[in-house]
Length: 143
Image 1 (cartoon, rainbow, N blue to C red):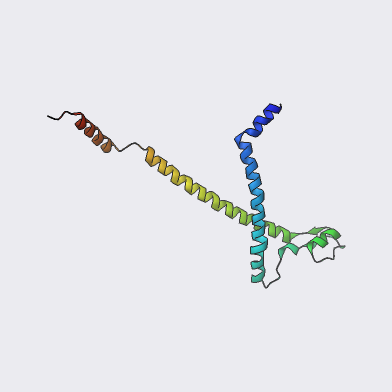
Image 2 (cartoon, rainbow, N blue to C red):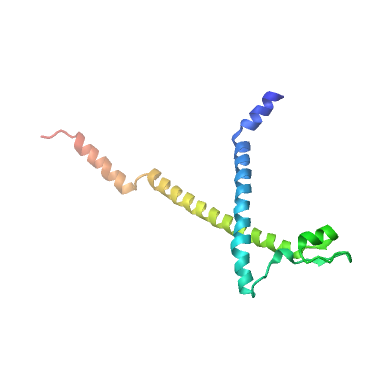
């Protein structure tokens, strides 16, 4: 059983998945920073300043009197729609970046496949015929 597990782990797909998960986690931090440090301040400036989605919530309990989300969660149940908006913006940015990356990779693959197809394509019929004539003329003895 241990040997089967080693074979399973050593397969390329499992290693690729592990690398993808690690890179995805690091990429998530970058997207969070882009949203929280770059996008949200611009949104705040455009909407009159001080606009922060993260502290937008609706208290679901009469015990909640706090104005910040963290303090309100300690007091009771809250409907944190502002946090959802921030996470949704993170998702949209991440989806857009992944779309652009896949589009670029597909474009690169397409151009590489076209190059390979041109290299691997047999010569045209007239070019092949001329090459045969040339070879016959070379093989003919000079009188």
